[in-house]
Length: 347
Image 1 (cartoon, rainbow, N blue to C red):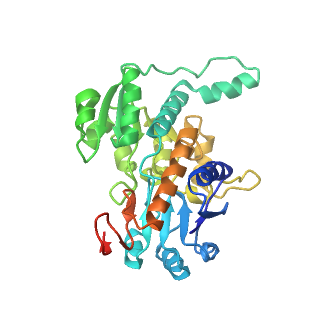
Image 2 (cartoon, rainbow, N blue to C red):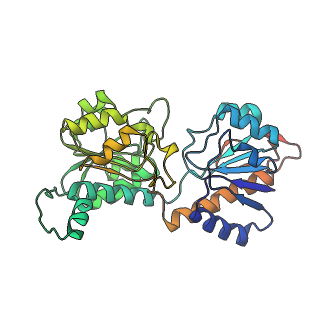
Image 3 (cartoon, rainbow, N blue to C red):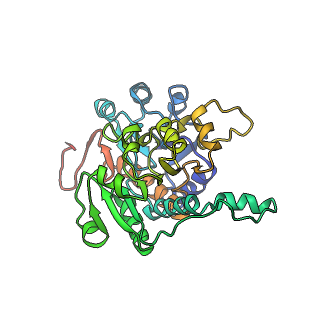
């Protein structure tokens, strides 16, 4: 079994090689620093599986090419799968599995770091002090204790954030189409999206990107948000209409914006563009605003998360290779033997 890992950075190699050598030495792995796309898919022609990340392209064209090359498995080393044409993968019989959760605390803690940096202006203070300027003008923030925080999406990351913010003494609201008894019992109230926007001093996004959530933050929803609220997105860039967010910042409807993800990030993030003229005018506009923080999709980047990603990815591969039912599969992709059966059955 040979695996091609696309969009592989140095930290991916380090943690993948550690797990592969210690637990799965029989698998062969080749690493590519660039993303999987229609232009690069031919590099997987001698492999049986590919491993991809959030900005790799797995549309119908790429999936068809993979199938023609004999690739039978797509392993996502992330939780989100909006970049994969799942119906096409099922049609082609391609196995697709993800890492549904990897250290949710890592992302939740980073969201809190963004809240604090945006609120207390620590990014600006750091730069000012390095220039010998110790003035405190413009650095007034507010205490988190007693403030209302709205969490959009109460999955594992949303719940991890709720637990942290409860310790700060925040009042917590959440919006999620699915009930969460634990949140309502111990942490706060589930409310409508409009109620959450109207009452929250801080809104933090922790939901997947889908047709239902695409641009959930838009001109209309920003018009209903509490004036001066802070907006945090560590989930998926497509949740926020960037142009609408810029206008809300300029009109001071939004008090601040912190993005670890960006709707057009696939062409920029995870690579060095410091010697180039970046052509994305919206991103460049955001970078000029003192109350906007932009990061490079790093909320997950901890030792714990990278270890779990590597472990679960190889476990998913091993399930595929040994024809076991995979608990993390999105598309099972082929006939497998289920424990106790003597004939292959379709899962």
